Amino acid sequence: MSAERSPVGYLDQLDQIKELCRLKASDFALMGYANITPQDIWRCVSERYGDSWPPLHKLVNDILTLTPTKMMNWLMLQAYKDSAPRDEKVSVAK
Image (tube, rainbow, N blue to C red; front, side, top):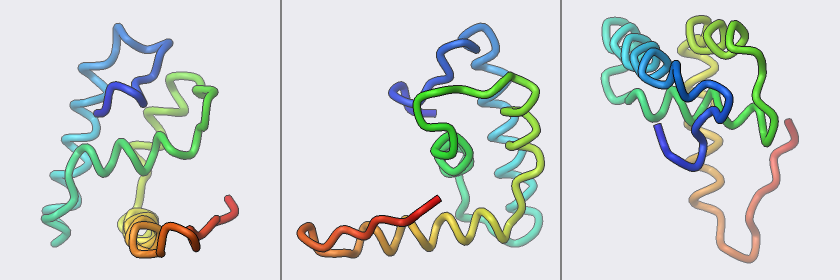
């Protein structure tokens, strides 16, 4: 979990949130998605919030209910954004 995207209001629960991301990544590995890391899970979920963090129960729910389809779509968008030339960076509407 990157420091710049740490959930400010949940510093006491940071270890548990990291563990949830690790467990979700291991769930994906059991389904055949072995290359997904806990950091990928965290980035996928946390990018949705922008500057304001949701209640803790919503954050936990978003991690636990993340589907392989949502994760793969997010990874594809990241790859697409990263491959675009600097002067043609793609803006994807949420």
